Image (cartoon, rainbow, N blue to C red; front, side, top):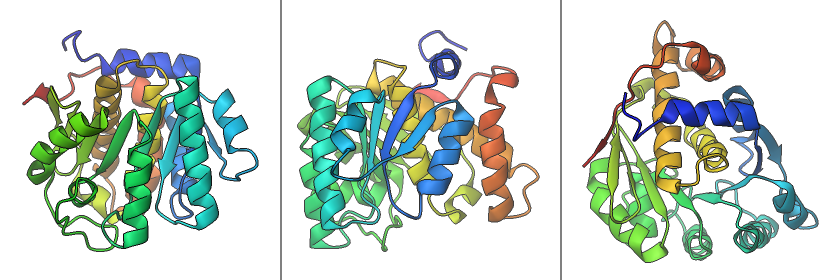
Amino acid sequence: MTDQYDAWGALARLRKAGPLVHCITNYVAMDVTANTLLAIGASPAMVHANEEVEDFVSISSALVVNIGTLSPAWVQAMGRAADRAVARGTPWVLDPVGVGATDYRTRTARDLAGRKPSVVRGNASEILSLAGEVGGSKGVDSTRGAEEAAGVARELARGLGCVVAVTGAVDYVTDGRLTLAVEHGHPMMTRVTALGCALTGVTGAFLAVEPEPLLAAAYALALFGLAGEMAASGAIGPGTLRVRLIDALHVLDTIPRTELRIREV
């Protein structure tokens, strides 16, 4: 294991810090995101009221914005929270769920992407749609491979001035200059709703302890994917995997520190 990509060291820092991660996420994802953050060692807060989002950002270590279940009040709260995070220097991650499916969703995602997120994390269709390409999305699911979006992700990262993470069979993370491939995960993870949203939450947790967003995103992808592999071993189906994934995240710091599959491409 090289010192260059020390995901295990970042995990140790996360466990020690227990960062408060402010999540404005969707109804489908709230439960699994909160439990995933607790399992990885962070402290989740699901706060979306306009009356308190700015105050909550001010006491949080990271912000997560997920547009899965939109409403006008939530959109306003997302914008206010993102702006407060940038003003305070608090890292934040955008999950543009289902961007490209409707004009409202696309306009919202692009507006938020212009508010200086630290990381944008999405599947291939979402990243392609956010960048203005034909995404090929099916609702909130991706019909495109991550490798198809890797080049577009680099352009998008340069244009937005942030890190873009594209998830798929192989994940790609780029800041527009350097691109990393992360080769962890299991196909059964795609059969459990909101695991991508939970991964975005974990990305926020790593942003709280790793100052380089490219590395924070790569570490989140690698360790979440490794936990998915552990969970899939012995799982009889998606329901079992969901429970075992939370357990696997909880025990990550007790297993041997094997070298993770993170490489430059």
